[in-house]
Image 1: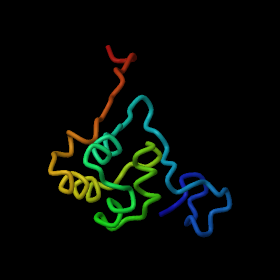
Image 2 (image 1 turned 135 degrees about the horizontal axis):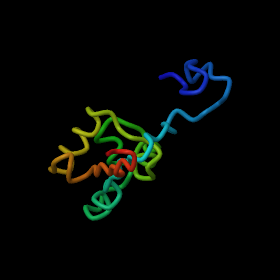
Image 3 (image 1 turned 90 degrees about the horizontal axis):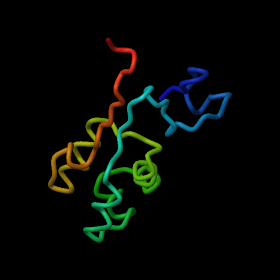
Image 4 (image 1 turned 60 degrees about the vertical axis):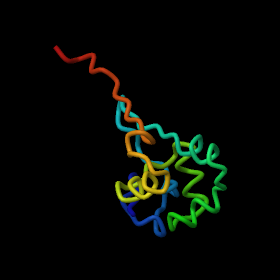
Amino acid sequence: MLCFDCKASFTNCFCKRSPTRLPKERGNSVKNRIEEIRKERGIRQEDFAKQLGVSRQTISSLENGRYNPSIFLAFKIARCFGMQIEEIFIYEEEPDHNAK
């Protein structure tokens, strides 16, 4: 993964920007219900992470909105919960005020 600022790999990044802090697309955002659903089902972050093959920190970053998952991870999360992706991830698009 490359840094969005200096374009170096994160291990060689001189600006030390966090790899989980992705630039936000202007006016649009993706929210998720991972924490809500996980807690409803009594699943600990550690157990959920193990089931998905990721770190507990990844789950924490997903739940706090600091990281958007790859499409593959989003599908794995949806399968683990027995839900559709759209039931977990909510894409919010702000209206384009410049459109005519």
